[in-house]
Amino acid sequence: MRKTQKGFFIMSRKAKRQLETVLFSLPAIILVCLMMYLPFVLSGYYSLTEWNGISKDAKFIGLQNFKTIFVESGDFLSSIWFTTRYTIVFVIFSNIFALALAVVLTKKFRAANFFRGIFFIPYIMSMTIVGFIWKFIFTNGFEKLYEITEWNLWNYSWLGDTKLVFYSVAFVGVWQSLGFYIVLYIAGLQAVPKDVLEAAVVDGATGSQKFFKVTLPLLGPSFTTCIFMSLTNGLKVFDIILALTKGGPGTATNSVTMQIYKEAFTNNNYGLGSAQSIVYFLFVLIITQLVLKGFSRKEVDL
Image (cartoon, rainbow, N blue to C red; front, side, top):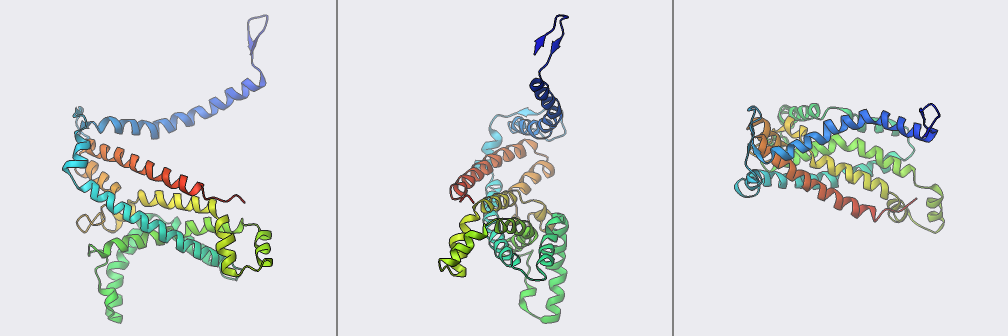
């Protein structure tokens, strides 16, 4: 920027571009701060208070809410245990099945594109709608199947038994998200260089050796993406539980997000709910960072 004889300032092209970039980005930055960071800061404040969400004044109580979480109430810790188990099952089975189906669907046969679309349809559906559909299947649908076949498999209370309900919820979660991970793995498989696979065949590698020794290591970026996405989806599970069981029977399927929702919006204890959300945020942050570091070290560049 330089000053003319009349006292006006003339900006260089580089300065103009930088100013334009800032002006165009500013509305988005302000919106992100208002929609994401401001609620997070307010949650930190309300976690130190006793507030029902209605009264104008929130009573400051220090760290009492955090003491309640870890000492006085076991509901939050039990919800973390359920969420951890669900996430482990969800990550393992969604990635195993998605990779297996992706390998099959990358083969050249007539119905490959058709099956890709079929597997992807549940993912584009609302999770709440999927939950209500499967709730009907687990109750009325299985009851009709039992009347027809008289197989005891259909006579179990899949949503009413405290042991079986976990597997029911996990199954629906994996089924709904499978198509998304299939697409990611198909993209990774198609990105594997053909000359590398041909070189492995020339060296005498069998089909299984070619897959496990060549293809799998080159799928490192796809693995990292799918593991991270399935991990975050497992940790934030909420809508499927709300539609299927509402956390029941009892607290058998009470996830952390469901526990925070109940505490804040059902019990009207926004202070304790905010404290639980802060604790869970730190828990998720640590887990995701450890997983990302572990998988990024094992990636193989194409």
